[in-house]
Image (cartoon, rainbow, N blue to C red):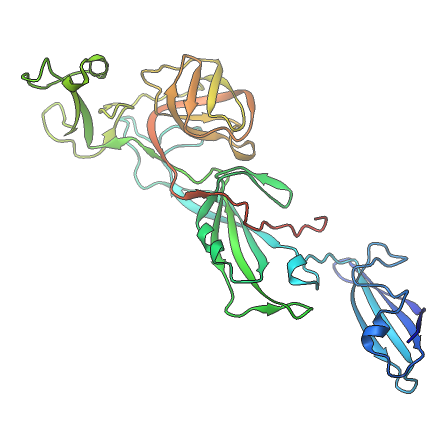
Length: 391
C-alpha cells in the first residue's frame, strides 16, 4: 500500500472569549487501495501528530483530529487537524505519562490563641490566660490526582503524615514539617486510557500550614514538682531548691515529688497557674514588652546566636521565643528555648527554615511546651503535582 498526503485547506481560525486561538487544517490523502485500513492511512508520511505545533501558529498545539473517507472515491481520505493555544495539562495520553494534577485552593482552621503576633501570652495583669480565645490560621490546599496500575495500599500509610523533608510543588519549595497528606480517595472501578490500559486515578490533598504542624501550650497546672533532699538513709526528706537538689550527692539522697500547689493561706489553688522551666509555681509571670535583641540563625540549624542582647539560663530555658524571618517562607519562627548554652547562644525546639542575619527577636518570658501531634514520614514515593504548563 502507498499513500500520499498533501495540505488540502488551511486557515479556519477562531479566537475564543478567553483569548485562546484555534486553527483547523484539512489534509487530503490518496491511497492505491480502496480497502486501506485507517491505521495505514494515519501513518501516511507528512501528516501532523498529536502535540505538534502549527506551522504558522507555533503556540497552537494539535489537540484533536479525525479522518473521513470520501463517499464516492474510496481511495480518497480527508484528515482534519485542530490546533489550539489553550493550555492543556491533562493530555489524551497513556495513563503512565499523564501529568500529576494539583490545583490550589485556600482554607483555614481555628487554633488556640495563647499568644499575640509578637509571641506575648494573652494574659491579664495577674498573669492569667484569657480562656477560649482562637485565631484563624490560613492554609493552602493542593487537590492532587495521580494514576496507579494497582490500588496503592501503601499510599494510605502516608495518610495524615507530615513531610519529614522539604518538597517541591509547582516549582516552589515547602520546608519539612509544613505539609500534611490527607483525604486519600481511590475510585470503586478503574479507568481506561486511550490504549485500553486500566488504571486507578487516586485523589488526595496536600495541606500546607506555613506555621508548621506543632502545638505550643502554656506551661500551666495545679500541681508542681517539689525537690527534696535528706542527710542520709535514716533522715527525713525536706524541701529544697533546684540548685541544692542538683548539687546533692549521692543521688540516692535526693528525690522529686509532685504536690498540689497551695495559696499562702494553705488552700489548694482553684485554677491552673504558670509553672517555670523546673515545673514549680511561678506566681506572677514576667513578660517582656520589647525585643530582647537581634540574632543570627542558619536554615536547618536550631542554634540561635544573639548579635545584641543576652540570654539568662536561670529564667529563659523553656521560654517562648520569636525570630522574625526565620520561619517557613521567611515568616516568623515561633518556638521554645530548649537550652541556654551561654549569654548569646541557645538551642531551640525547632530549626530555622530560613537563614537570617541580625533579625529582631522577642522573648515573652512565658514558659511553654511544644508538641508535634502528627507523624513525620519520608515522602519520596508520594507523587507531587507537576502539571504546570512548562513542566
